[in-house]
Length: 102
Image 1 (cartoon, one colour):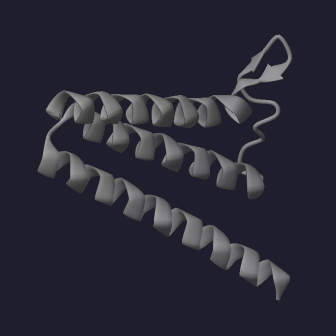
Image 2 (image 1 turned 180 degrees about the vertical axis):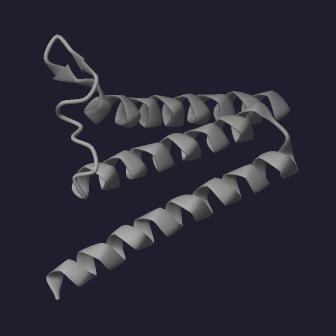
């Protein structure tokens, strides 16, 4: 029973990731500003992070042994770092655009 719940939660995470990308692209197409474009890029990084995590969970890839740099597994950290940096950049860009409008 526990395995079934884990699989359902993993499917839910993937579906929510797809919905996030879809909504971010819609926001970008409606507002057509740079912060909404970076939001769409951030949602793509979130989806990559989720996909890599699920591929590692199901043992399709091993993030601890792929893309090693001086013994550090980059595939384990790069998607997370890209997502967080992109989100921070998006928030700063949104703040700058809102400040410019006032």
